[in-house]
Amino acid sequence: MTKWLFRRTNLTTHFTCLKVWFSSTSALSGPSLLEPTFPSSSNLFRKFSVTNLISFPRRTRSLNAPSPIQQFGPCGRIMKNSAMVMTIQDPASQRLTWYKPPLTVLVIKKVRDVSVLQPFVKLVKWLIQEKSMLVYVEQSVMDDTLLATNPSFTVVKDKLMTFRDGKDDLTDKIDFIICLGGDGTLLYASLLFQQSVPPVMAFHLGSLGFLTPFEFENFEDQVTNVLEGHAALTLRSRLRCIIMRKNEETAKDAKPPTNILVLNEVVIDRGPSPYLSNIDLYLDGKLITSVQGDGLIVSTPTGSTAYAVAAGASMIHPSVPAIMVTPICPHSLSFRPIVVPAGVELKISVSPDSRNTAWVSFDGRNRQELLHGDSLRVTTSIYPVPSICAQDQIADWFDSLGECLHWNVRKRQKHLDELSDLTHSSSNDTLDSLEHTDQIDS
Image (tube, rainbow, N blue to C red):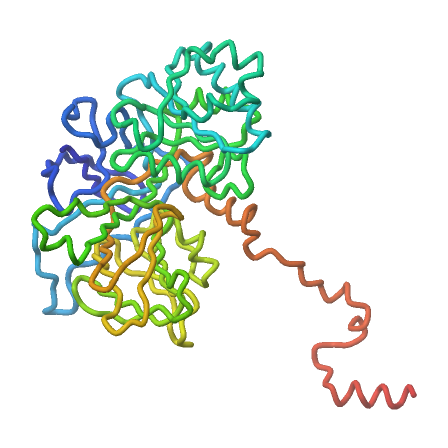
């Protein structure tokens, strides 16, 4: 695997590019920057790469923190360990580039929403007739009775490729993904691709749309810009969740453990039981705490604005490498949400003395029971979701905070000149003097 290492030469955004080789099986390897000569045997970002633009016009500072000094006082110094050194590209410099022309596109539309049908038909027809692309849709879309009676759709219906969720493998078949709907369409795209995910362009046609920054009105120009490689990327990290069953760890004919990548969060809760959850939480093998409450949310920075924020967590920008742990209605006033480094391994298991079992769900799907002796292991995956930005990583996120969550929205405080009852008082007036004035007037 080939990575590019960017070394800062001064306080501006000028970088020196050094070519560094990493083993594709390295535990430290993450989302990489790729070249046109990337080996065909790998499945990481098969037809696109993230590149660094030396003169990126929208930012003059890195989103990463500056490299700390290595010496502390006259004698203290960090011990060097070259085997543990990682290089992370500045998120603000992540730009999409195609080293092969994208030929296939997967279009995901929101289900059971009539308002999405017309935009869907226009987009599919334009992609086939104007861009000569091979378009994939889910089989259930073809079975929609409203689409079947649409004259514009019947023209291109026979040219569409279909797939069935859970039966057909889309790995290495899709170059580009377009979502029409709300945040659920992006979560579904993440579910479909449990390893490398093609670039995702999400149009806001749903209810909330926190993860869908594009408006559909001028979709032709926007899609053309992306196909030409003019787009910024946000690499949204995912969590790798593995369920280890007590009986399967020792059995010779045991089934492979459940292994799912989630974009938002994995939730462990008490299910239908009336008792408190009693869940043990381990971090890198060390018991951190036992959760007594309704449950626990382990989320990505992307998921910090979903279920986690409703449970009292902070909102984290998706470019921050972290994992958030949030209790659900904990039976303790001091149990606050915490943020841990993205490189740790979390282990969640039902406490031996728990009165009940626990239930776990992954991005709201695949809900299953955790029995005594079972455990859930959570780590950061090396396969992020490359989400295409409408503007850039910072502007898109704060626009979503304001428009979707109405972050810090309130009526403005009036200026003193607007308050008629205070126009004749000065800042030196005291309550006693004002009361004395009122007594004289009366």
